[in-house]
Length: 159
Image (tube, rainbow, N blue to C red; front, side, top):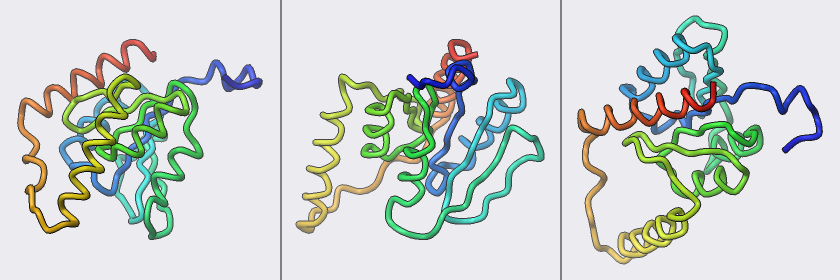
């Protein structure tokens, strides 16, 4: 919580870890922001095109490891939503009182994030030892529906 009453009553913001966010997910987010008026901010280390609505913005940060992630965490307020597939970022968001949703429609939770971090670290160790596990499956229509439903559920509660 903040001591500033104006910030306490401020509607939440949706932050997007946009460098790796699929374009189909961005399109769903753009439509939701247009429909609801919620502030949507895409954070990336490259220039991004956004629709011409005052509540949809992109912020370009410097190149570098976790620069966009760190900027999202720095600006995040409790109750804001972050769209990311980055598990360490999701952990930081949850620690700061935000919510995190991955592009496949899974809302990260404090009860499962540590196990996800451990699995991620294990897979990194396996890859660095030369074992190739392949990447994540391509985003499916089911994933897109799950994402849209989870986003709608968040918006219904937040607004």
